[in-house]
Length: 124
Image 1 (cartoon, rainbow, N blue to C red):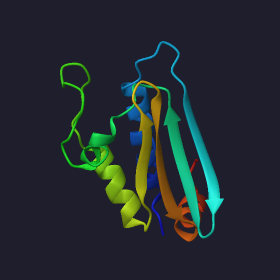
Image 2 (image 1 turned 30 degrees about the vertical axis):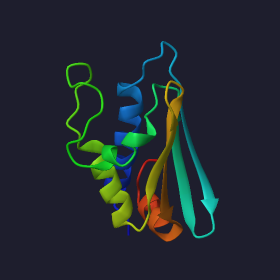
Image 3 (image 1 turned 135 degrees about the horizontal axis):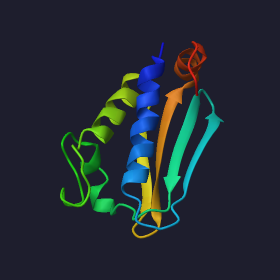
């Protein structure tokens, strides 16, 4: 069964990054969820700076950051933790991005895990 606090942490870290790295005066963030076969597919999209494809694997590694640390304060732990939590519950995480136009982080969770975690008195 998924612990609600861990699922909340996934959303908190992904949303926090979307806000923290936003470089547009009118930033937009979109959250979606669709049912696919036996899993839920979540997505969090933004219209921020985007991430170059060469960094896709690096950003999920512990203590890895992309911008200079003097511009954006970051420990480089958030996305590594998100990946660990998602994979712990049998899901996967990936992203699609266009530099200068934003990115979308996707993650999946088996329906049984997501249902168990989100119905036990949590606030979505």
